[in-house]
Image (cartoon, rainbow, N blue to C red; front, top):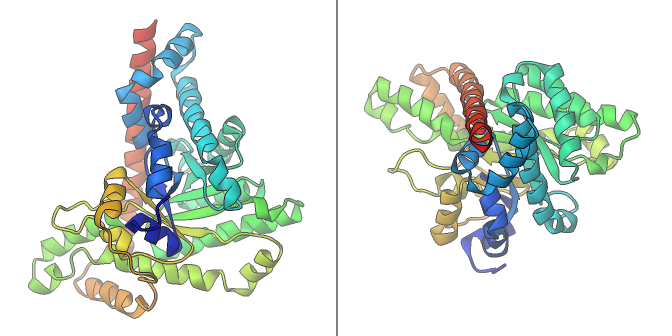
Amino acid sequence: MTETTPTAALSAAGVSIWLDDLSRQRIQSGGLTTLIEEKNVVGVTTNPTIFAGALSKGEAYADQVATLAAAGTSVTDAVFEITTDDVAAACDIFRPIYDASNGFDGRVSIEVEPAAAHDAEKTLAEAQQLWAKVNRPNAMIKIPATIEGLEAITETIALGISVNVTLIFSLERYRAVINAYLSGLEKAKAAGIDLSTIHSVASFFVSRVDTEIDKRLAAVGTDEALALQSKAGVANAQLAYQVFEQAFTSERAAGLLAAGANKQRPLWASTGVKSAELPDTLYVTELVAPEVVNTMPEKTLEATFDHGVIVEGAVTGSYDEANAVLDAIAAQGISYDDVTRVLEEEGVSKFIISWNELLDTVTAALEAAK
């Protein structure tokens, strides 16, 4: 990997670059390996939307779909087989990075069925099934940070399974996610599990916060309100990093870290800009900090590689200004709690819609292969 590119500079600043995309075509063509070698990609995240898009293009899946159809496999079982095969193959590609980084990177995430987001017991059961099926130490199971998801996160971590907590929007929920992680580590320690083998990231969403708040600022319509547009997402994430710093220097966390546990790293998700008026690397360059992950759609990765300006420690010292931004937005009559509630509900709903689209796509493919 070259040491002179913006993505190399980003990596040197302590940011792990994970690609927010996966498909069998990308795996088989060598495209994923190229991104590792040339653009400093050290992990992958997936979700139902990504798999629905991959399966809709379909050609790389034709042979497996035909085999599954001939065996009379149900659509849900077919989706399980197809997606876990992709994740296992990607894990194998990333295994050297996993080994070299002592498990911090080289990770591939796969999400539990989104319809289980409000069912802790079902989420836990599916997390175990996915972990066992992929059967790779560098897999991560994605669990939404709903209230019910918090319990599932604790119990999944307690079993020694690495977790990517997704759909975090508020600072309050982020604190609860960290508590769920630490509680899981405490249970794992009591069970005699080697804490050093358990890793977790907390996916804090960025651009969606701007999208929702900007819409509300536009409805207010004053010059003061409009001047605050596109500032909330970065400010919210900067304050999340402060929460991370505080949480993992606590006495409780220090005891677990001394016993071999790993910090739950913040992961910046939803980092593609939603407006053409914004710099296309906004949610990368403004959120440079040690010990974080930035999971990027390929378009954002390419923009960062091409012209990203990386300033080490961009988050450091930003907390007062970030608080001032959120206070100013609140002064416009916009409720932070309502925004983050709406975003969580929409996030779960969008993933359910994508999951259903995925089921429909695979159903059609199975029928066509008969």
